[in-house]
Length: 256
Image 1 (cartoon, rainbow, N blue to C red):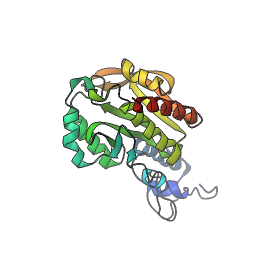
Image 2 (image 1 turned 90 degrees about the horizontal axis):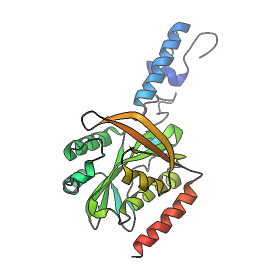
Image 3 (image 1 turned 45 degrees about the horizontal axis):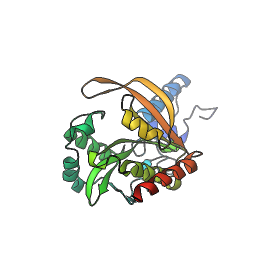
Image 4 (image 1 turned 120 degrees about the vertical axis):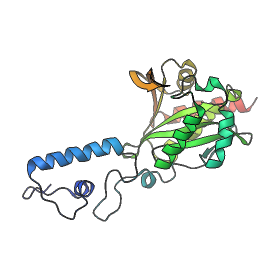
């Protein structure tokens, strides 16, 4: 804002009204700033949610900041492919085991598929299909995307029970972490899981990811069930040691 006329800064002016010049009274300016801030908090993951710069370009967008966010990641046990419509039948077949859904947000695979495609198309989540021996065996996602903070979450992960203990989940985490830190330039990667999900918590601790505590009554899942969530993270300073630990584990799995 200019001190003399109370003119909005260009990025606030563009986000608020899209006008070339806007003069407001001090109390109105506060309201506009608060409204703009609320818009960012609520809708920051949508492309262009932080408004436009004076030249008309978007200040922030997941696409501009992380233009390689959705890319094929190839391992020796699994390959992660960005979700496509032709994966749907294979994912539905892989999801047909009730053990998968015990701690997921929904216990309905069709509801999960519908939400996953919808969120992918809206640009708020980047799902991957895990391919093992040529067929879908599970899924995982980049989510809670915060490019302005160089932060994201790896979550909504499930694997068919036939892959449990094979290293498939560990390799999927390795591929996503490596891409996040070494290609996307992330400083922090988060993980959240049901506090009662001991299998998932043990897997995260084994990465190793840092346990950051329990967020009580964090979510309502599966038709209103209260979930306490266990939070974990890996930061860029820790990544070299985490990478070495994962590569050692995966070498043992692949050497069997």
